[in-house]
Image 1 (cartoon, rainbow, N blue to C red):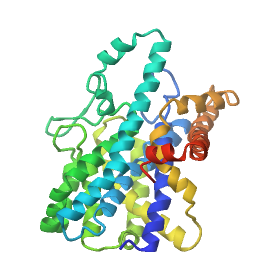
Image 2 (image 1 turned 120 degrees about the vertical axis):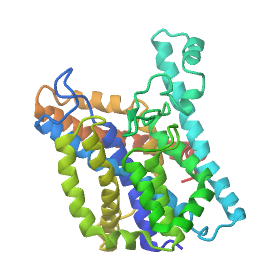
Image 3 (image 1 turned 90 degrees about the vertical axis):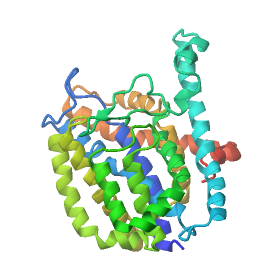
Length: 369
C-alpha cells in the first residue's frame, strides 16, 4: 500500500506541479521585439528562464513518475483482471476529461474564429475537424532533431496543449503490460537504458509516445513493482540530487536557447534530479508540518492544469497590464511573476463556482478527482 506520507506527498505535489505548469506557460516574449529567446544577462530574462525553463521543467516529469507509481499499486504481481479494472477507472480519470477539455478548447477557438469572421465549416475542415483534440500540430509543428538526425515530434500538441501529458499517459497505460515486463526483467539496467534514450532524444518518432514520459512513468512503476516507498527513495538521494540540481539550473540559465543541445542535455538531467529533490522536499515539509495538504486545492489541480490555457493567461495579463507598465525590466519581471498567480486565482474562482453550481459536471471534467 501507499504510505500515508507518500499519499500526502502525492496530493500536495498535484496542485504544486499544476501551478508550475501555469508558470511555465507564462514564460512570455523577449524583452525586445525580434530578440532571440536566449539569456541576455537581464533581470527579466534571468528570472523567467530560471523559473519557466528551469524549475518548472520538473512539473510534468513528476506527474509521469507519480502516475506510474500509482498505476502499479496492487499490480506489483501482474494479473489481467486487475489491469482491466484499472483501465476502466482510467477511462473516467483520463479519457473522458481528455475528450471533454479538447472539445471545450475546440469550441472556444471556433467561437473566436467566427467572431473574427471565419466560416465555421471551413475553419473546422482546415484543421481536420476533431483531429486537433489529439494533435493540433500536425500541420504546423517544428520538431527538434536528435543526434541521429531523426525529427522528434515534441511540439505536436493537442489544441488544449497541456493535455499532451494526458494523451501520453493514456498510451503509457495501454503499454503497461510491456512496461511491467520490462521493469521486472531488466531491473535498474532497463531504467538506465530508457534514461539514455531520453537524454539523447532517441525514440520512436510518433506523437503521443515520447522517451521522457516513458522513462519517468517506468521509474515510478519500478519503485512500486519492487515495493519501494516513493518518499523513502527520494529522501535517500535528496542531498546529492539537490546539489546537482542547483548546479544544473545555473548551467541551464547560461546556455538557454530553444533546442540548444547543451541546454537540452542539462535540462533532461535536471528533470530527474529536480524531480527527486521536489518529492523529497515535499515529503520533509509535510512530515515536519511546514506544508499542509488542502483538499480543495488537490481536487482543483486537474482543472487548473487543463483550463489555464483557454485565454485565461490573456485575461490575467490584461488585468495586470492595467496596473503595471512593461516598459522597464522591473515591470516586465513583475508582470511575469504575477501572471501565474493571477491565472491560478481566476481558475480557482471558476472551479469553486462550478463545483457549487454544477458539482456532477465539475467532477466529470476533473475525472472524479
